[in-house]
Amino acid sequence: MVRINLLKKIIKKKPEQRQIPRKVYVIGGTIVGIVCLAALGWRLVPHFLRREAPKEYTVEENLRPSTYSRAHAVEDVVDESDESGDKLRSGGVLALPYTELSPAEKVNYEIYFAKNVCDLLAEAVPEGIGFRKLSLDNFQKLSGTTLTASRESITQMLKGLRKGNVDPFPRPQSTIRKKGNGYEFQFAAQAEFGLNLRAPFIDLELRHLAARDDIDRTIRTFSQTAAEYGVHINGAPKKLPVESVGRFRKFRYTFKGISSYAQFVRFVSGLHEKRIPCAFEKCMLIAQTPNRLTIDAQLLITAIH
Image (cartoon, rainbow, N blue to C red; front, top):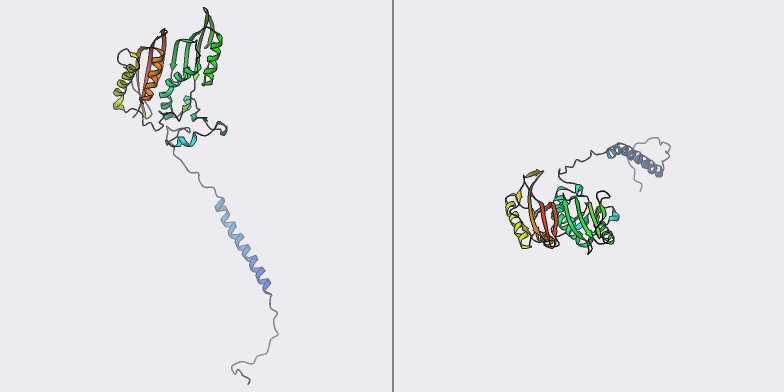
């Protein structure tokens, strides 16, 4: 049976239009999409290329690049080698001159200076050399007058000093001259020991410093330790004017004493064993006899305000 749609209008049939292939629509849509993305990118690229304003960082006035603010940071750097361009020698020694150390590093360096000198001389000076005079000055200079029977001993001593980073100045500051049947060697040198970050008495956070109210007690402990090791101090150390340097207060004392060289060395080591935070800013040892010398020294004790 044929179904007839009575609502359908009878119109003149138009000629059939040719359809556009689907492929054309796909290509056209792709082109339009690419153009839109390009336009969007053109607007966004300047935004991403715009340089951000540099961040501002605030650094404490007293800090220097060589300072480690955390105690455990030391463990992170002691294994670095010189080949990497670092400032550390093998063994964890910070190889910077005294003048380039940070304030906290200087305090630690100062406390160790006299001990470093004693340790160096124990290794560098051969048997047969005797000291007439030995002087330490401002944690940077070392000078002395020695006597020996042969020039070979002086050559050996020079090699030992240079190995310990103490290089005597040339003439006229350092001289070798004939003296009786032997030789007299006078020298002055710049001492650069570096800062051994693995040493037991190193504390870059400065918790080991004496408080201002404990300075007198520290001086009494210093004198008691001297007596324990056979160093006789002539009276109580004399206090000098106190100096304020940044966040530090510098307490200085002068004293004179008598001992043997061996007793003086044991005394210096004893100060470290007892963790007494004092430093020999100046010290002159003058031999009176083979077993007796005089001590004329200036002691420095640093405290935080």
